[in-house]
Amino acid sequence: MLTDAHAPLAGTLVYFSTRSGNTHRFVEKLGLAAHRLPINRNDPVPHIDTPYVLITPTYGGGGTKGAVPGPVIRFLNDEHNRRLIRGVIAAGNTNFGEAYGLAGRIVAQKCQVPLLYRFELLGTDDDVARVRKGVEEFWKRQT
Image 1 (tube, rainbow, N blue to C red):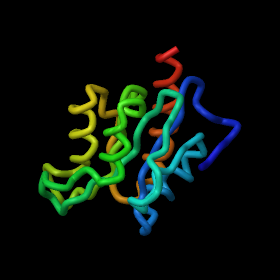
Image 2: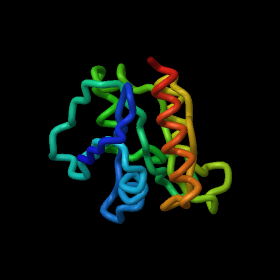
Image 3: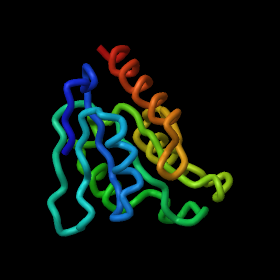
Image 4: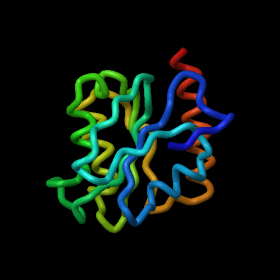
């Protein structure tokens, strides 16, 4: 879990990152309060008690099947957690064309929340700045 004095006003970030750590490194660069979902399926599903924006990578190599990582599905299948999602940000690979950031679109549609942003792989410095500012502004509008 990351914490920072610059945490968003009304919520937090929840994210999943594989052992490759791409999404984790992106979230670390944001410097915002965040909770990482466990990689191991035997670990308990965390319960988040504040509204959050979800950051998820996209899986599947360009297809729709398996685009949303299993740990994200497990987390959102918990009614308590699903009720507190307010938006989603997706990581992806532009090589996958229309499937770029597909996990974010799927989660946004199923949970009826906005897809706030998509970034490629580790994200650029510009992506980090845009997401940080966008998330902070998003939480200000939520209060």
